[in-house]
Length: 377
Image 1: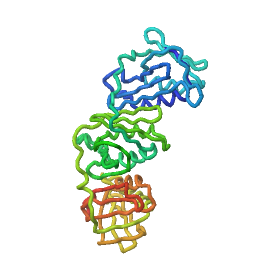
Image 2: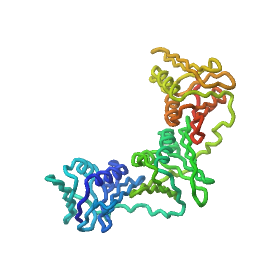
Image 3: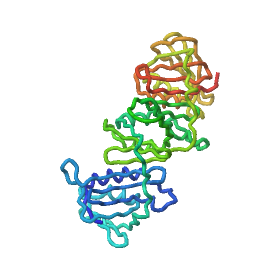
Image 4: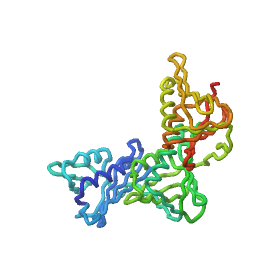
């Protein structure tokens, strides 16, 4: 194998596929990145069995030559050293040459590295996914959906299914739900798809890594769901993830449909007040903050830690409807929910001091956050 490539494109592809490589794998060849050179261009692959990423660099793009392949072939190179080397090469072009016994020479300017490679034929094959049920989302929307849900997945392995985000495709609508049983984040989006109802629980870790690769453009991402895999296709990149096995709990019963108290208030001011109140509760396991309605236009946020002190702050609301309110909740959960909403005005609907309450934007009901209160009163 022998080729020359533009360094900036090499760095981008290597960084993308490295996100799927784990140093803790029990399969030694998966600590490497597979490179295959063909007459069409270069393909890079990284995998840890759960996530697999494939990046393709064509010979030419928009009339510019990116790769010149003199000899086709393949090699697997240690991901850790390979990614460090390409990042620190001195010139804008890089030469690769693979000799007998998988010896690989990487040249750029006066720098030359000699790496021992592995046989690409021993690298596991990527999943073969039939593209029967495909739908598409703009890249920026997909990135937002991930950000607005993935933070609420469980970090505990006691219920592995809750470490993923549940995606349900039904009636031309995608509903994404994450819960750790103390809070819930849900985002819906309209989609166009022909076919049956689809459901998949995607590991939170996979979605976090996918989000790092996605840019903020509105280019479309094609999404394919099968029984045990999901594939995201965009530009010259394929991102595969295995799906979690098991039945995701029916969360629809958790979401209240009526309320006893409802308040509308500016999101940013509320977030900053919760943040200040949490300063004295951070030693506490739950970071508990109390919220009390004072009158029809004001609420009081407070936090007490006996050995440290107390903080109290009043906030003006847009409106308060319904019964008087006294409730306690985790400041961390509230701040996570408010950051996900990113809206100017929010509506919080309460059904009682110990019942779940929901937070939504006044202007957009496609995003819903739910939090379970904490008993303190």
